[in-house]
Image (cartoon, rainbow, N blue to C red; front, top):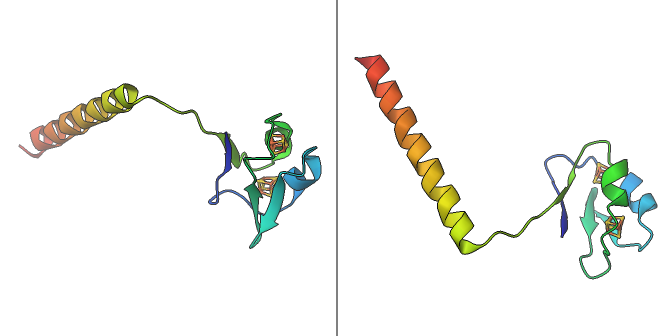
Length: 87
Ligand code: SF4
Ligand code: SF4
């Protein structure tokens, strides 16, 4: 599934022109993808000068839990390192 990053999209409309399925429209100056029309062929990703169209990769609950645990450990390690620098 593709999604447009609103922080990057400039509303240039190049993706709209490239889409063979007419799955993209500009809404309030930004691209919007209709997931029911998208095949997805990724042509829009290739033409976007901003790299604003990204693919969302679904992950399992276990993968998410592992990622959260790893990030939490890294944050704790960073805090410990900062505390050591203060001493
Ligand atoms: S090509 Fe990229 S920057 Fe232009 S409207 Fe589409 S998503 Fe936005
Ligand atoms: S992936 Fe293809 S079908 Fe889907 S929005 Fe982009 S250009 Fe259109």
